[in-house]
Image 1 (cartoon, rainbow, N blue to C red):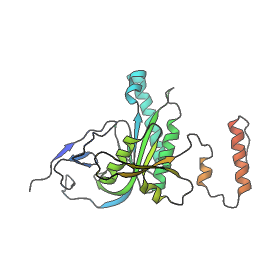
Image 2: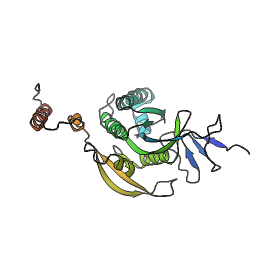
Image 3: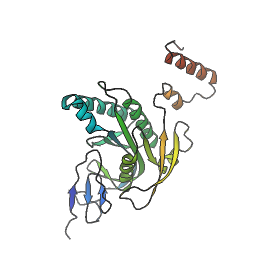
Image 4: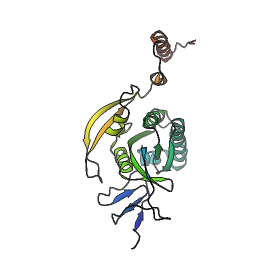
Length: 249
């Protein structure tokens, strides 16, 4: 039996829309055969993983506006902010996609926190330029091959990223279900999206986050039975935003 043929796919800011081919991480199997490890010809075991894709919006316009040298410095600083968010939230960078990152998480909550951190960090000007990104997240069984991930769960996350608007985080309803009861996260039901390359519509949610939230850690920290202390801290944060700082003991 002849081994399945692969066509290498070079990622840029978007994956080409291939509705007739099975997308496998960084390769497309045009023969509709199962995806194999290209060295051992054996499939790897699937594991439930949360996948995040980020994408830089308007990179071409930024390149033309800033020039090659300045744009390179801006992109480098921007990627460092993204990687800091990944590291701080327990993610594993799978690869750089030219205009964004692919990241894998063992924890769905960490993936959503990372997406929010990325968006908030991107609002800070980098060398005088404000960077805008979009993010897509999905969770499911994903096959791992030589450090890459592939399968329907991966494709769904990528397509959600493609559909997101500037500053938006889109995820599947699976993400909301996995985080049910977690008050730190908020979602908006956007209905079902038809995503190219997928036969069934995907129930989609938008992750709601505050673009600038100095009290973000307060929403993650259990202050049970300490309402007075929490109110005092929030009041001091409000004073700080108006320029009246203070020390909270």
